[in-house]
Image 1 (cartoon, rainbow, N blue to C red):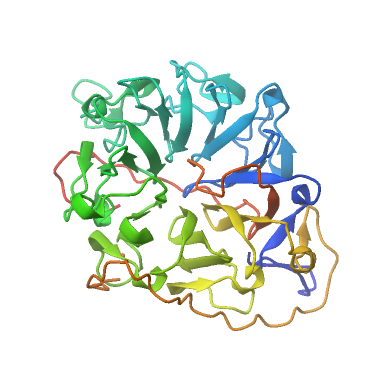
Image 2: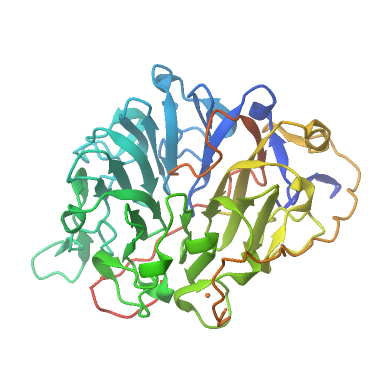
Length: 464
């Protein structure tokens, strides 16, 4: 998003509206991924090919070099695999093949690629992760989580343990030298099962910058890692070094099998009984944080199929609409160059109204949406095409239409709860080989996010 202007100041390109990427014209995309700390993007097509683009200073695009790509580029070294799922961290990418193998590329300083070693700090080409029978994966800023069908080891983690986000009961903190006050955190390069969850079958997982949320086969929600702003949902801000069950989701309010979960940099979300969306953590720059899960009543009655969260913004695909909200500065909400930058309440992305959303992804100051092409050719033809090249100078675009709030009649079985408005891949899209078109709200060129360092001691109240 943002405006791309010529030297004379004439507007050449505006990214406040969704734009079609060049790849989507000839390829049926089924899944997209980025991360709340990511400045690069991943797209998978119905044939299992993997495309990447964006920043590449750590080799996170997997194309064998560290050169930035401004347009989707085929990861040719994955051509012998059918890639079915992917996730992106700050500077690394992890994919899952149909045969259960997992491969990764990019920065490996903290062992986040799961290769068993940090000898090679950069891996610009795909390397095998030391996991098997993988079903899905999720990446935090500098760590990775895998879900496996191996009995007793359904969830494994590797990477930076600084805030306990690996779930093994420690942050692996040590002094760099005897008598030194400088602290470091021992990398965990070999994927390790989370012992406290060995008796559970974990079905879904999502990662924020430094925290993790997961759902077991009984619909119970667990969270662990950095606790600032209440993003773990335990009514307090202490870090959790091991998975802790979120008590809101139990008895009649456990998560159904088709639940959607998402984790942003400083917040978390999931759909529970009746399809009701709950969120917790920091949702606004001002006001109180949501220290425990609360229903987002503006989305009651919507059938949410997929959701993703960026730094402070969110996208969902629901019914025949695409809905976004949150704190934003670069047009990543898709409301248009003349529309509002941020929205405290969920609103429809008007230019995508009536389209069936297959997959969504939010990165650092950018968003991606995959829509089904069926019966929307005329609407898609109205979108500009972004192919990574400089564009010719053009005329001023028409002001955006007034964006309408995402209101809908509440479900009869949706549980009415008081909403104290205090202000804070696995693939959830449509099942089957339904291909679509990618609409990217911003090219992934934003500066890389920097993580906060700290001691990460369990029980300490603090904010990121």
